[in-house]
Amino acid sequence: MALRSLGVAVDHLFSCDVNRHAKTTIMANFPPKVFYDDLTVRDNTKAPKADLYVAGFPCQPFSTAGKQQGFADARGRGEIFWHVRDYIEQRSPKVFVLENVSGLVKINGGEYFRAIEEALEALGAYNIHHRILDTKQHGVPQSRRRVYILGIRKDCDDGSFNFPEPVETPSIEVFLDPRPRVPGRSALPPESQTTARANVKRALKELTAKGHDPLKTPFVVDCDSSPDRSKYFRAVSPCLTCSRAAGHWVTSRMRRMNKAEMLRLQGMDPTTFKVAVSE
Image 1 (spheres, rainbow, N blue to C red):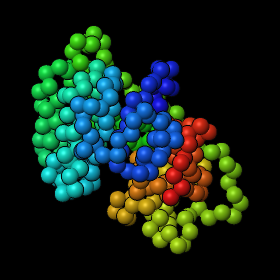
Image 2 (image 1 turned 90 degrees about the horizontal axis):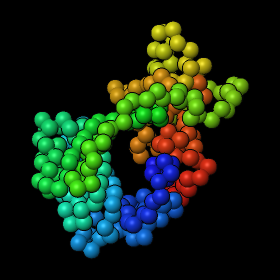
Image 3 (image 1 turned 90 degrees about the vertical axis):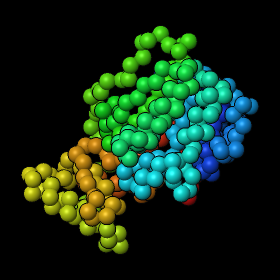
């Protein structure tokens, strides 16, 4: 999607995802020539040889919000990286881009990240770069910190690569539907949504006490978190994840984000991107 937005012609050779909803979405929007359902059983010696290989191995074992089991993850998710590395070793793409949560760099004293870097450097054929980037500093007002590991094959590297520098990001207002406020609508979630209602009520009280008018200025509340973790952001969305699929609360709209808004905040055009999953 990013390459196409830059006008780069793309020949999508293959994709891989064990999640059936992810597969349905990929096939509806970016159908590859080959789809693999399970990376762990793929024969990488026979996989298509790509110029650019992009992989996001599971983040749960490396997230500061999880158990931080790393490669010892009880569900085997930490081992996926080694299958990713095997593809790189077997098929030697010109460039690879790996992505994960920023916590990968620091959990377990940085030991897991050092192991990953050393494993990639041991291939011997790549110049390795990494940096933590936050979406809200690169054009989309969503707080999403991720570490990107990029490898350029040495025989293709002209030394000109640099990670992008931060740019001015537009207000979240640009990404929200310009719907007028409905007269008489409550500024709080329904009473049936106990946690969300309490979190939004507390946020409105704190913002008003600080001199803000949250019904005019778009503050976004992570309303479905536990009370001790719920936060609010001015003109920026908290990180969008599957556990927040119901949408964060937008104070100036007195409602949750809708589907189109969440797509825009993830770099997708809701008028062309096909939402092929209804569950």
